[in-house]
Length: 211
Image 1 (cartoon, rainbow, N blue to C red):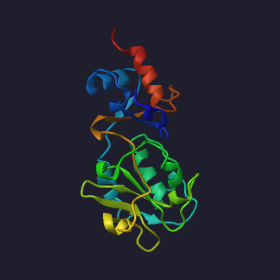
Image 2: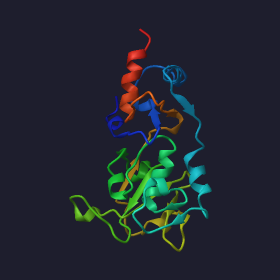
Image 3: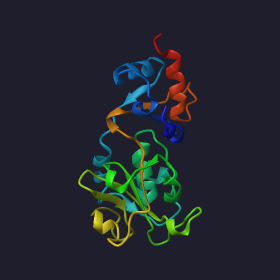
Image 4: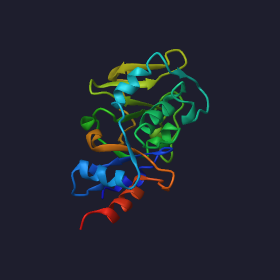
């Protein structure tokens, strides 16, 4: 099982299950059937970049201590991407500094659609290294553009890579929440189940695997 499994927390009553991380030798369809057979409902989610683009010109940027429940109507950079991933049942904190600890890091040359790109921004914070201040985040598209909640003047916008990142700097971090959206399934958690993270679903699956 991939170590990143331990950072995948359910969001509300949704849980994302990334079969590529669970490393169970069964086709996606069989694992989905097993999960549905114990009371979970499969939720079909539009592509994440499609949802992000639909919020351009709709979501309002608010510079305040927002929660994910305020989204998508009112967002800042961190709650914007947190709301997007919450639709897939993947929880993220509402601060971009702490979001940068989730998933796993990828090299700039390996970046791809859905990755979160972290930069210093105007008021970066850091955990231990002041050279790695993080103050802003956006989500990468396959066109190598970044969709992000920019500020109270521009709100949610789509910028080119060079518009988002100062050409003289590198991004502070690029994090990947799922290796493959094709192998990510989102389920509605039944009221009778206490599911906190994807690891709980893995434990349940193991009990029901065919011998």
